[in-house]
Amino acid sequence: MAEETYTNRPKGDPYAGALRPVAQTKAPKLAFKAGGREYRVDLRNRFGPVIDQGELNSCTCCATVAAVEYLFAKREGKWLMMSPLFVYYNARKISGMEMTNAPILAAHAPAALLAWGVCDDDHWPYDLNHFNTPPPNEAYRNATVLQAVQFARLGSIDEIKASLSAGIPAMFGSNIPRGYYEAAERTGMMPELGKASGPPSGHAMLIVGYDDGARHWIVRNSVGERFGEKGYLRIPYSLFDSHVWNEDVWAIGELEKIGQRTLIDGTVSGAVDDFQRNGAAQTQSAM
Image 1 (cartoon, rainbow, N blue to C red):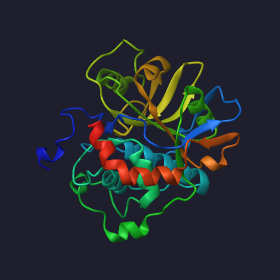
Image 2: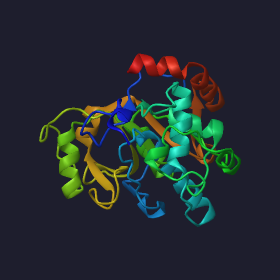
Image 3: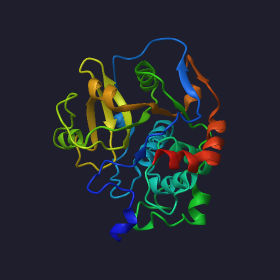
Image 4: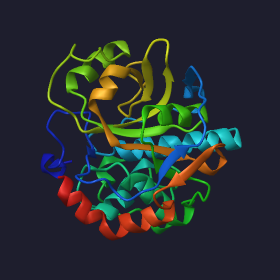
């Protein structure tokens, strides 16, 4: 495809696709009523292969769909490949950018999934040449609106760990400098804070575990399985704390089934409605 098609993608940056909101978006927050979490969590064994987002700014949608694939595998005992491209088109519909290979706000991806569902990959495969083609009617008919799936903001490190301890992965946006990704591509581990450099990359990934002993997060990327540890990497706590967008960490899953938790500051359906009304303005202010 012609180079000018990808006008919103930073040249040469494979770790891009997420916009940081200028103001905190309206969405519920997941709060835990009681303490208690695991010392170490690793959810990777329920996930399928790691997709390569290629030249598309689809990292938020790759992370969101991976979280739903994980939920399906946990619930049904089998893995089903779902369509990030379907969610990416509809998330850009919320953003008012559906004809452009545009980076989006992280929360627009799960909002699109709740509004239009997600079809399986056979009905809308990940073909870069179709990024600005509306999915066919058959894909929308195949799409499942997963009523049990919710998303909510996580407001602290302890809440991220509590969510993971309950089996719920978390998507996050960050501006980690590119040199850290280059190191992790080779070793599977990002260096400690201050040990690498480069221009910042607005990128979203999915947290699937952590290790308090080793003091790192276990994270699923979306640049294929040649990266790091078969598509996964570890991020030191110090680096994460410095570069994560604190208002942009999202639990995605069956939140109603988590014990000792509550949703505050609104409802999921209210957030989806608000994003559909105001998503274009939110996107323009963030670009």
